[in-house]
Amino acid sequence: MPPREIYLDHAATTPLDPEVADRVARVQAEVFANPSSPHTAGRRARQLLDEARERLLADLGCPKARLVFTSGATEANHLAVHGLLPPEPAAGRPLRLAHSPRDHASLRLAATSAGNRAEQTSLPLTPAGRLDQAAVTDWLAAGHQAVANQPGTQLLTTTLVCGQSGSSEDLSGLASLLARQAPGCLLHTDATQALGRLPVDVYDLGVTSLCFSPHKFGGPRGIGCLIVRPGLELTPLFHGTQQLQLRGGTEPVALIAGCQLAVSLAVARQQGEATRLERLRQRFEQQLVKYGREAGSGPVIIAASGPRSPHVSTVAFPGIDRQAFVMAADLAGVAVATGTACASGSQEPAPALIAMGLDRWLVQAAVRFSFGRSTTASDIDEAVIRISQILQRLKPGSKPAWPGPVTSRAGN
Image (cartoon, rainbow, N blue to C red; front, top):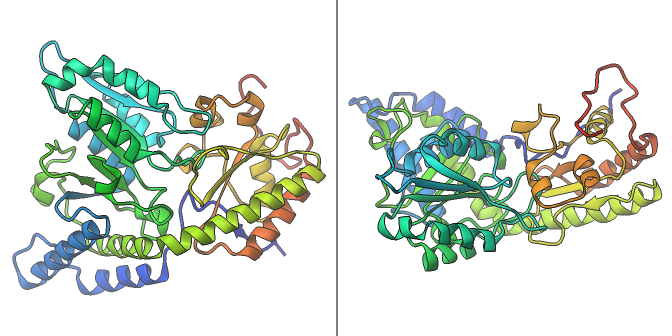
């Protein structure tokens, strides 16, 4: 009989909250009409959509902002990068875009795809996994003339909670820095990993745009949001008449209703859930270090020197191949990851961990554990026991003892 599954990969996706599932099912059955249709059924769908939009913006402290519903955070990040920057740079004043290795892959790829019309800079990180503010200051100073004469020609992107390390960014500090030195510079953040774990108020954070996908905190898949402050121009990726012509396509009313409820529940539960998750993470790390040392591995907690989200613990096991560990954990019934789910097919180490200046052996041995509403103290205790057994079996530099190829990593 296979072991009871312990799911410690909530940073990749979360179980659908039962209340949200019920809401999606009811709306799908009862409010199925196209919200653009003029008849009664269509107007009913439009009213539900408009109410969901208003409630969601109110929950995130920005009732006057614009909200574009997308297919997920990936699309929202692309819409932010491509939509907020002017379509064409002014003569002699190129557009400038800064990002960093701590960003989600979708945000980094969105920046890369804008390379033909914007000068790009990848900003360094501190050992705690945050943006190096001195480097941000230097970047702003280099583009001061462009910003002073043409507001909106610079865009700084970052991720509120890094999905690779769990480190949280000082967004309000960054926003204050921009306000002092470059008030025309736009600040976009991906808050997908933060909602429900950290306070997320768009105006308090000081960002010009913010996106997320609710499947990371109990909501449905296939829906995402981009929130943009009033007064900013936004060029659509998909043209159409829907959503004030900012994103074409019939709106998925049931998914939007589920998204709104997931946000509302996440905001209402945030303080209590953050405290509970912090206790679980501390319990996990304390036991893991104790058992790991007994097994001779001496686990190292990544990004422990700075602020972290309470739901992520990235741990390096010296001499243990991270891919071999993840496969062994899966066989033991513990679901974990080596980094963000979008990069799970890659054998390359997490970019953020490299940019933090960690020793190579730490980066190569790093595994991410992440917790959620369904995680219990008994899950933590049992997971640590199984992990300690795995560490006793795996030897430094070992490969899995079961059929299947293991791709070697550069430098190993």
